Image (cartoon, rainbow, N blue to C red; front, top):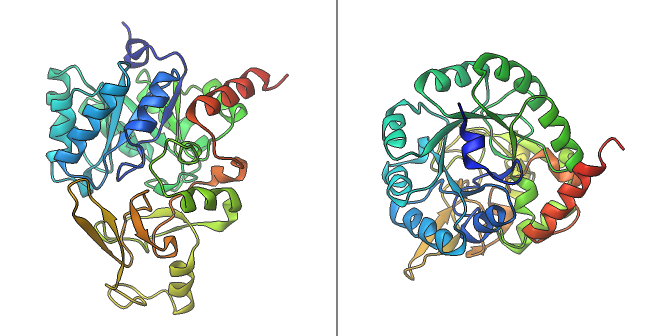
Length: 328
């Protein structure tokens, strides 16, 4: 019996993480799929109409399989419906029970995955009918459901959900790391921060450049940027707002410095402006007007190995060369 990985039949076992608010948008996802990986759209914090538009735009750019990532605590259901109606090949759900969506996904021949940070979550997802598990390590950028390193989670979770295919995520950015993780039983890898540092990622240039000047010790897991998703832990690059909050004793909401203040806006396709308040969960996408010092700069520990902004095509060449040369 062929599993999901066989049936997707991508040339390489490399996926981009579905970085939310459209940072992983049509340009990035299509480029990853065209390069031989699996491109995954980042639908977190987006409405169904915008998700539908992203899927349609991506399908113009590539005829190869694509995926979409939805963050369930931030979902009103319209994003999942848009993924079903748009006919993505893979639907990744994060941070909640996937069971309500499994039957609909299967009826549409869409593979459904759960991103999990613990063996308990992975077993629940497997029992609910997941076609695969994305195993997250605490090294991940963005929202982090794990308290364990990827290597620890990988060994334990693969053992518990076998024979379901597992995709590894968290702190990965080099071909040598990819080869090592695949040798440990992962069927593919999902790279977030490494693909954030590409020309195709829909992130502000200043945000991308910050990746090049930061190291893993400049990142921290915090619950500070929680507007729209209270108390959800996330790994960010330390910036001005984080330092100001710590200097004031790290108070809880609503007593944080500048709580509720306007800090910028994002231009919408229909001409509207999405106004953002301090401590929003929204990242610095290209259409953001304001200072990135007031936004969460999601990034994983993999920034230690990121020194240039590349095209997706060139990044694949780099990674595949590194994989081929690993352990030589």
